[in-house]
Image (cartoon, rainbow, N blue to C red; front, side, top):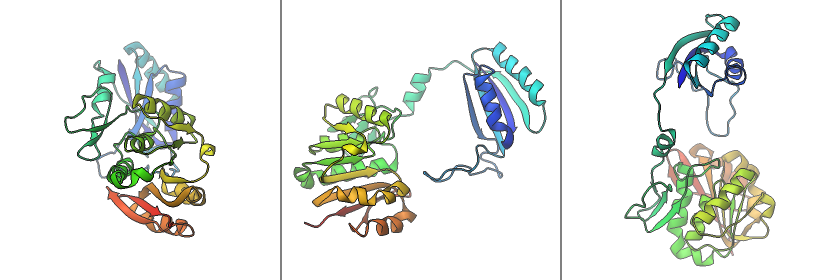
Length: 301
């Protein structure tokens, strides 16, 4: 493998990466801030759910990977013919990349995650920790939710801590925006029944179905329209803006004495979520983790 490293001004980045992939046989092209970790570093991509108005940094480093040196050299030659070697696009390096076991390297980034002392999320290639008495086997995939993000951890923690007292009443459970299905699976392992796991993303629905089978639990998966009637437990780990818009939809599904658990909310967004749900339910902050919060409400009987 060989990589061609380029410095590019922001206006040139999008066309450059398109050319590398579509015309010049690059296997991949990644873009990073050329000034990262320096005084001119730019925080281009902000908070989750907030779209960026720019496609690249003012000074971007583009790294293109090629199968062999000849392909990388040919791309460099074509690039110079098209752009020249100037301030807009400049070649920084062309070098060989050591062969690596990319599968093993990727797997090494995902370790078992302790939700509580005895409840763990464990990738399939890892041994189950000795302390774990309840385990979800979950591998990273296309759908959000591996247990590593604070928003997911808080939801899982809430389920585990409330289950001893509350799970006998969880006769119907809804995981709205289920992603990988990890919350629905956790609820099932902690005694919840009648679980609907729904998502607008078909890939997430398939992932949830497969993960449920791998963990020996039953979920009823499908699009959001599958959610009907009221549920004793409603879980939604999305982001603040869609959660605010979904307030009337989610609240109508909460049964008398039922619980609503919301995550994907930054600490500073607590007030807007409280106000959005106030006509139906009184939300309070039930947990916080690394700048994120979990909010909870229980409907009166």
